[in-house]
Image (cartoon, rainbow, N blue to C red; front, side, top):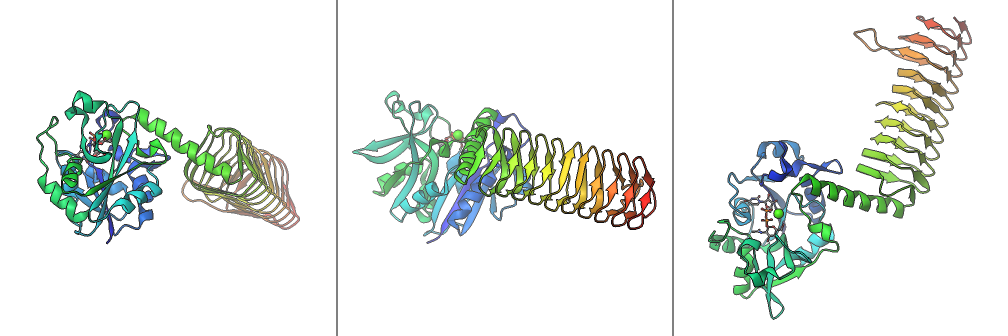
Length: 434
Ligand code: UD1
Ligand code: CA
């Protein structure tokens, strides 16, 4: 027995009013469909088939996961969609069917459905809603699930049922193929309903185990940008709770956004409106003041990032001070106790222990030793219009304010550059250059 997944993602998503296929809209920076594929990977499925239609090519090009693609050129219903995805299904498989626009179902919930599925029983995810409008209703007799009736086909009495079909189910492969061969589109919408397989299974005397998710949002699909925004807040709130559980203080768990992975030590404090993108790491006792953006950034323990700083593809060592209003661009590496002050931009810059670039400077394509002081307004002139050149400031160098260092240039150990200098040639150790 193997678990195989069929993910339905052919629908148009008309209500998104978007050129982007619905399942590619990002939640926490990641396409909806990728959330489903990442979570279900935890089941170690033997195979995953994604049924695509609208925007098929864009979906295939965007999603990096190793899946089989099945085409559904006309959206004739969820049953028809699953039929298109049967090519890899074996009779003894446990086939888990879910939607590409339902991003936050927990692995444990999928696992419950898989556990409920065997040759003579299928598992179906259901919920109880005060207002079940729009959903397929779960019909029961003597407590046992007997069928699902869609909103548009339901009698007034059936419409009062408040147990609904979430859309996720797990069924034996052989049964699935047999049932799908038997469904028709004689219904209010003229569609092939996947949900009709429930009635067929019940008629065969098979068990139907209804499984509920821990949280209702696990079954929420995205049909509009409004629902996407609501889901984003739910997800961010979950991530914020996780951070706090791991020992991070958040000034306001409602005002942090994580679009990727944030790995943290303990006793760090993150103030409001900080955004973390990609793979970010912060150590222990780090303070991040309001309005900072970190993109693939590592910040080691004891460092403070003052307000309004942007750090991208960089590594900041222990006990550094960054900002306020600092911009650390890709390739910036700071050793411990370094200081990057306000309105300073760095790029491809390796800056040594205890060195300071405190005010209004640009340090790009540079190697700066330890205990170097770069005065206010210093610029590494790294670009001659065609090529980028390196600036090297050796240990204990002092650069006076408002200096221009025209690369390639090396300032030797212990040398001093006077304020307002334009340095076009190398400076010897311990020399004074003006
Ligand atoms: C479906 C269920 C309903 C359930 C609801 C939960 C059926 C017949 N009904 O209804 O019982 O309460 O989901 O949200 O299954 N899709 C395709 N190809 C198609 C049709 C749909 O890929 O031909 C995909 C859509 O992109 C979407 C998913 O299947 O991701 C569900 O389709 P949708 O039209 O939203 O189903 P509902 O009518 O809401
Ligand atoms: Ca739907």
